[in-house]
Length: 305
Image (tube, rainbow, N blue to C red; front, side):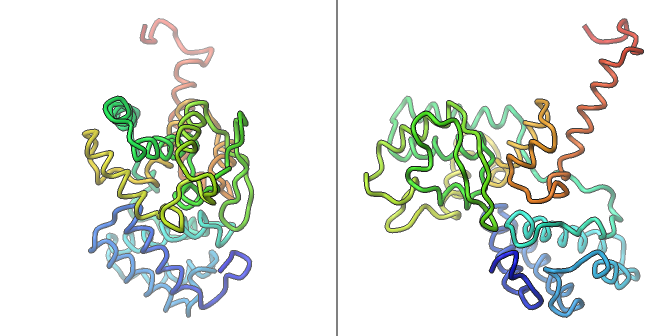
């Protein structure tokens, strides 16, 4: 299945993949998964199997059908569809996200769950402690995985399926073939390159994958388990941490540090900047702060020291 081939009748497969992602990466509870499944399948039935290819007019039809429902029910259904369309766009099955046409009875869309700087610091402090105390191959591997997850914002699938020679020498970037076959340039920090070099020295010379596991590569589910176990040992609530959450933390912290949305779109590999605009409230907060502290008419005497 690809973005170009996506059509009516693909809903069931995509809903299944979405629910799998929610369970494996987002750690959604069973009741949440059941609610998502029910709402998405009902919407698919109403659109005669065309939910995945729905446009604004189709979503307007859904909104009209929901008019008699309670505000909380509409909010729940809209949230399920927004999360689904974000997944479909991020996975490259379609280039746009039509969810702006959905009703917002509960207010503005919120940023996905993320981590603050202190929590991320605790994760890496735990990695450093492990390396200092034992430095096992498993610790070296997890350090490389974490540096790439948080340092470059890779998707879980992109990360675990990296080829063994993805990084070459001192190149400060890798060319990644992501969702939908699209290529993008991913900057790699010195820390990440050092971590990957340390891990590369431990894998078999003939390995196809950078993170091999048996005859295949490390699975997304196993990556999720490793990240959660690290969080528990680091004193960070494990239910708050996943590979996808680290990707969101990468994006959020870059914006807080001054990156613009266009740069973030390229780094995250979003086909449409509309997908990246889920982070605009972070950028907006920074802009408000800039106006309040840097505008020439601001009374400097009122600013904090």
